[in-house]
Amino acid sequence: MTDTWVIVGASRGIGLEFVRQLLQNGQHVIAGVRSLSKADQLHELKSSCTVPERCIIEECDITSDDSIQKFSNKVGEAVTSGLRVKNIVLNAGILHYPNRATEISFSDFALHLHTNTIGPIICARKLVNLHPESPPCKVVFISSDSGSTTVFRDDEDGFGAYSASKAALNQMLRHMAAELTRRGGKWKDTCVLAMHPGEVQTDMANIDLGWEVKGSIQADESVAGMLKVIEQKDETGSFWCWDGRRHPW
Ligand code: NDP
Image 1 (cartoon, rainbow, N blue to C red):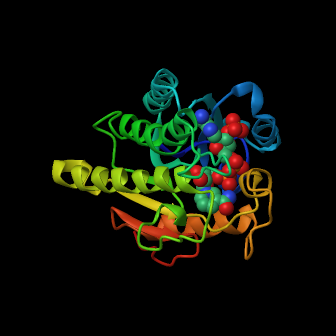
Image 2 (image 1 turned 30 degrees about the vertical axis):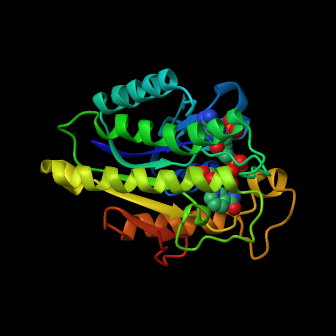
């Protein structure tokens, strides 16, 4: 069996950088993207890989139950043909700035929740339940410091729906961790982690926010740090920063 990573939300930014570093390290990757026709950088990355077969690209629109199911079926087929899912990274996310509690529309709030909370949880649920006989894996949710209720920043205007969606993600992933532990068997060794990637210079920060975040880092530094954390941490239901510091819930 060949170990593989599943990265969902891999067309650009942090997700694309995960795929780049994993391929560089000789790993196998199944990359999920919202639309196969809007993932040029990922297709180029695959083509430039010395062994392009190590990168499988599949569609996964995280806001669609049907798309998540089809993606999960494709991952299941890959497992049947000899891949072992070692790590799953739920990275897809949106931030429509500003998203103030006093101004948010029903549809924009719903879109933040579908993309940042419901989709990642449903996708993870389907993937961890694939092939009950296969060994346990790590499930990593790319959350945010904005989702922490402990370090609530009331001076940070315009992040209401985004923060709420990441806080809800944090709560659901903690339930997932606890339920899997109680389920016993191989499930108790499935490790569920939340990660804050840092303030990273991606389209989300540069275009969506429209300002350069103070103290921000590049995606390569963030992902290199997160890969180390994912390898080292095995306490299920825990929350970490990209640089290995524990993050408060
Ligand atoms: P980007 O905006 O650069 O990339 C977002 C990624 O999510 C893209 O690949 C995008 O795909 C994908 N995505 C969005 N909606 C969907 C969908 N419906 N289905 C599938 N994929 C989708 O953002 P980042 O790389 O910065 O963010 C990655 C994650 O990190 C997010 O979860 C974000 O909340 C989190 N984060 C980022 C921080 C930062 O400073 N950058 C700070 C804290 C957390 P497409 O190209 O199709 O739009």
